[in-house]
Length: 483
Ligand SMILES: Cc1cc2nc3c(=O)[nH]c(=O)nc-3n(C[C@H](O)[C@H](O)[C@H](O)COP(=O)(O)OP(=O)(O)OC[C@H]3O[C@@H](n4cnc5c(N)ncnc54)[C@H](O)[C@@H]3O)c2cc1C
Image (cartoon, rainbow, N blue to C red; front, side):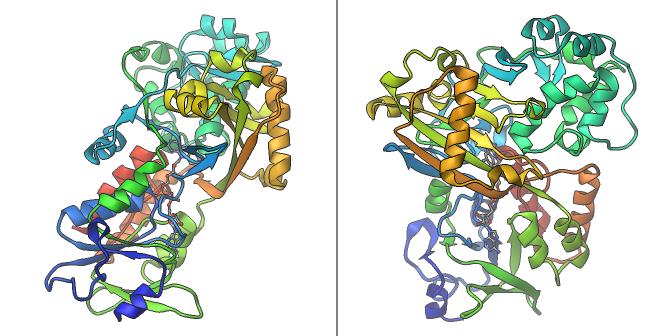
């Protein structure tokens, strides 16, 4: 491996942004050389942990930029998130990482959300992932029909099934189909872009399964879950976007970063691993002592084909949902009279209502920093999202068409009829893994097979949760698994 060869693939940057060569002159004999493949939040967090522990770390990212699903873009002159835009603040991993990097957290001005169903924007009733905590509040919201409400009131109490089932099956057994269709589906659609009747209850809504530890009635147990204290922020973000986090991690994480460095194969050597990096016409061999794969399931399956074939087969079976985020900027004065935009942080749409968009976030209402940055440019920003698992047809539209269907749905939902001054469509092909029934067992089998290979670990959204804190936690676990 030569310095020239290393520099032939993408951008190279030594620890703390220096321009030192990676693993040549700067390499201290005896220091473990660890490669992290994939520069999303999981890979970046793993690389930082490893560097802090004294490893000589290089992060190899296939695309031109680090960040993965965390990305910012400029819309009407304002830089905003066009992927993930918030992290759960109830878990420590995301907020600790951001504050440890010296970043100041911000919290949503409002998290009051709406459900656009049965022809109106309705308040989202208090629930535990769609299990209503107050049936009278649910009735007042108008989210369910009279028949759906009567079925929910007549809950069929039952203990937790002894095996994994789909979220939809679990909740419908207790509360009927309409609770699933109009409450659970939109919430799961927002987080997973998936469907309640396919997703694993144990992997995606463990808090719902845990309700049944308190007794056989979901509603009775949900009613006993205390509402979030108003002063306790549930979510956190960063002024300028959570998409800033990867950039700061790459700059200050103490590890080398190479972008445009797609890893195409990995094999075991006498002392560690050899990676095949870069285009097929000019492949480069990169040797390392230890290897962390922080890529989505499909590329990870390819990279594990020889190293851990059983894990590779399991990963190849993990399906992904594709989606698009459409960010729209309107002149402030053009939307001043649209009351709905000021009343909530946005709305979710149950698939059963047959609309194209599955959610809208009123970014300028939700985040003070988006409102202020937009106001300075004379615009108000919001976004819609389109696309659920196995509904790729919704995305087989041009960017202009995605903007047009977003505007049409927004007009019906909120009365907003102004034309945007700018729009940005970010497509996320294979954006979110789908945790099918049995996912936790699958992940255990994957980890067991990977653990057979000394010096190898995996992390990322495909395993223990797809939110930012869960991905960081999986990175820490991967580092611990390396031993
Ligand atoms: C539209 C959208 C909105 C979301 N909103 C939120 C939110 O608000 N809050 C939240 O907590 N979570 C949110 N999520 C989920 C969360 O952002 C992701 O689950 C998480 O960022 C995934 O991180 P990761 O590191 O596992 O993978 P990724 O971000 O997918 O990163 C993997 C990286 O690996 C690279 N790569 C792939 N193959 C190779 C290869 N062969 N060689 C080298 N590099 C490779 C990719 O280019 C990519 O950069 C959202 C996701 C999406 C798609």
